[in-house]
Image (cartoon, rainbow, N blue to C red):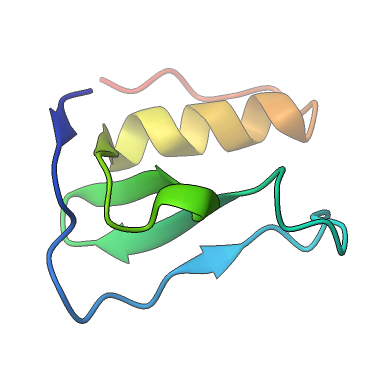
Length: 72
């Protein structure tokens, strides 16, 4: 889960549908070939965290309270 700064240009960033109208409490994500990039929406020019696809699926499954499949 390396951090990089800044994010590559031209990515399609999105916020969770659970994000409220308050723009001070959000993270944004962008899908990339190897997984997902995550950044603080207040610091779009700042560092991003890179998460591999398998780890991201595992994380989302936990949020959904599903039984996750452990990545091989």
